Length: 357
Image (cartoon, rainbow, N blue to C red; front, side, top):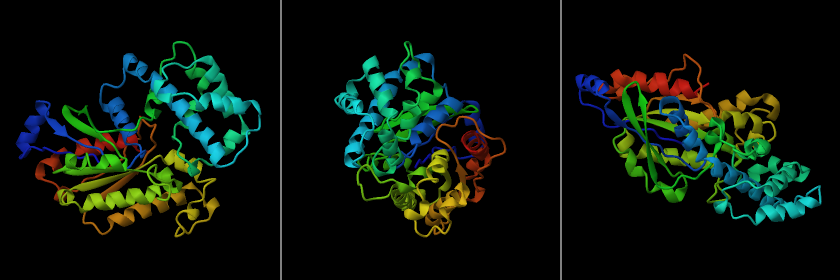
């Protein structure tokens, strides 16, 4: 989940207009459970509304892409043992040992022996079976994206693409601030750690926010927490959201719900039935992706219904940097100070359309 709070509004409409002219600064913040896509969301905002990523910036992600590849393959190698899945090709026992012994944090290059080992492992039917059972262990959403494109990534002079940068997984620790510009208004978006151990560090960042954007990963309906292998991630998201909206700081805040990773949900729902994790789902497994998505929306919204807050929602994909025209996320004027009612088009017309579809 992500919370993006707009704070520090001028006290009058005239002051707001003056702030717009002088590039006034407005603060925002993001918080979430782990791996819900909040850091990717912030990267999208940087690409759409900020300076984007220069060639030098992209080059700084090169070793992180390599590390993500090794991390993903090591996770599947460990899972092969846990799930008692056999390799079809005998040489992959040696390849697995080679990759498993790599210290990922020290990886800065992608040597050919490792490239060939990873390609051979990824092509093994045993590893593919393991990948199909990824809900049973912790695996980054970007694993398939990188592993199917190892040849490109292994080329000499490789420079990460914008899509490569968006998909890099680096757990957020502490509190990091990013500024971006929406029509001469500078927003400060704060990226915070989503794991349980990180949450105590960020709650104070959101005192007095006026509007909240809340990000939930739809694809996590069949996954468990990194911190606890018997707790469902979707249930954790609901619980954290319920906690967040009961804080007195947010009683007058409006909320926009973004249901993230809909593309991953649509792929996953065909082989991992929603009813196995949420028995109240009354659709058949073959009834289609739309029914599952609608159910998850209603499931999440059920937490909201007891609140007096206004809610709007959007389905988004984590790798999206283009939006469809005409998407709106209205913010009710009665829930905001008057200045926000004049400023709401900045929030609605720019942030939501650019990441919604």
